[in-house]
Image 1 (tube, one colour):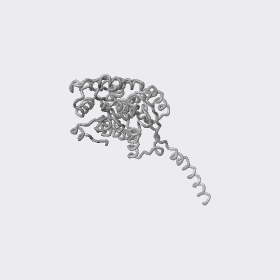
Image 2 (tube, helix red, strand yellow):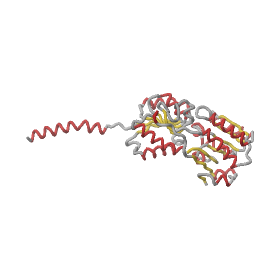
Image 3 (tube, one colour):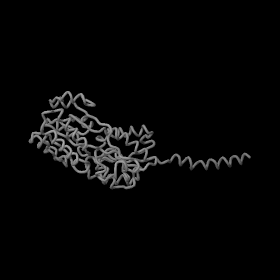
Image 4 (tube, one colour):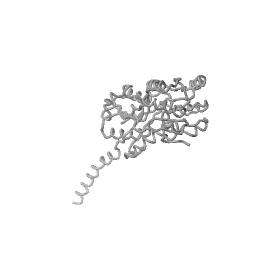
Length: 326
């Protein structure tokens, strides 16, 4: 009887071995993160994304893995970086910006892509519609062109005597052209003369700012995008050096020294993007997740910059700010 008991005990032990091993070797989800900037320019967004994941029970290095790829301001690198992520056979790719999303979409039509923030996804052909994306792309789209009039209006209200405003933008995919059209339409209504200046390379920055001063621009609007965001510090410093009160696309710019900013809360979007990743990992198809537009907006004023520029924001504008940097 004792030998028979030992026999069954050995069989049970051998039978449990593979199961225990299988449990230990359970595959954890792998996410790719693709951006046109750098780890430092994406830090705020990544912090929000990680927070969203933690709220859903995901801890990087424990039950989820993330592969990071950054183009470091060189958009021509995005295609190779996207292809590199696809070769890793990831479960989901999260993107920052229109160019990064286009590169990821070109690299794969099967791996789900969650857009943390980007321009007009419908206009760029990345999704069929907001309600029914239709392919492997979903996430969050910006509405910067729709905010153009508001930004120019806030700038005019802050400095009523301003009549000539320069606009610095990169152009290309992402909605800059549409945003410029909307800004020009608003300028006609507000009787403001615009000076659009496209910059394709950092070597053009100094020349662009010199052109602003030559044409006596009294203020500046910088369009937000992966390219301008990567070179944010240099662009803000040049604006201060040239004594130009500047309106920028979101709070991250004001935190970096831009005088005024108005735009959607991108951190809020990236926290929500973690929820999209969670749903996809649990079996939901990207095509069944509607693309969301921004729901939370921030108007920020940097009074430190105002003091350095020697300008005063109109009190009726100051009290409307969601946040004032002192």
